[in-house]
Length: 150
Image (cartoon, rainbow, N blue to C red; front, side):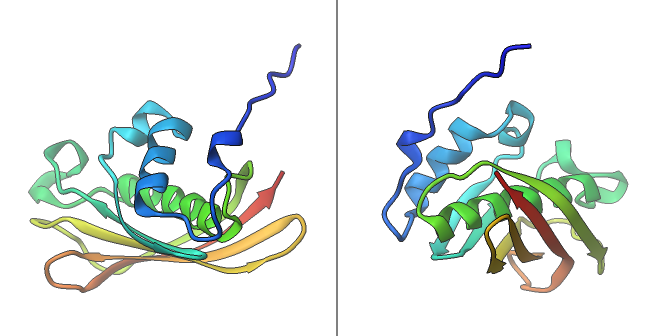
């Protein structure tokens, strides 16, 4: 089996990634089904990112509630972007652990997904994510994550 080596040179960024460069990374680095979530980069600072997850029928369950699978995928994606903003470039990583807590249903509004890097070592990174209603600001989902850095 031949291992394909990918060139991530275009994703070497300044120490502070911009929303535009992270939005482009969403298009270039993530699978089509992740792109189908319609995530939009709202803001970023080193080690932090906020995404908007638009409300849609495709991501909703009975009663218009945002499904848990969409929340988890958005959280995992947001943390990868937060790691890019931390390092100033894309570094391949793999989710080791994503522990999630669903606090209450979210329906009838977009979600804001806020990811923050807590600690980065030589081979592991740790973070936390909060997902809340874009209109009411109420937290509906919390997660903690661990990533292996390649």
